Length: 132
Image (tube, rainbow, N blue to C red; front, side, top):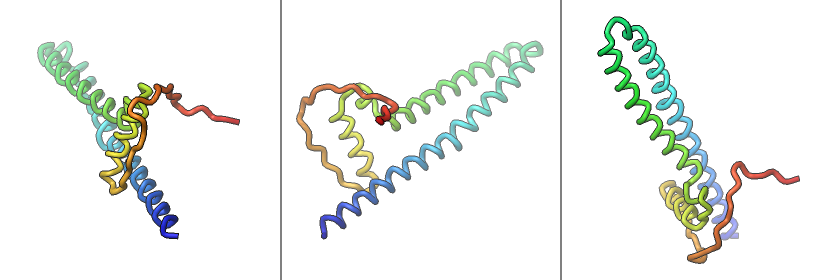
């Protein structure tokens, strides 16, 4: 009976951690990337207005916009790594499980990974194939 309660508690904490990750992803996209892309769009429109009147100012603005795009691209890479760890995408299951365990530990879920040191590499299909 106690084992069932512990298992139910672990499942509940896992679901809470997963839901929090989804909320964080939504926040990152909505509050970070969305406004940044809108700002870059406005900057490009301003650059078009400056192009003939003040080419030097237009070039400086384009440099700032290019830097902003680089920063946002890094943010997207960070989000992508959070969604599918690079280890898992490369077929390295055990390191990916350790990464996942560390992430869930931050949410209070104690996970232990017990696996052979050198399991055979596997191919990860993403998105998962549907059966039936």
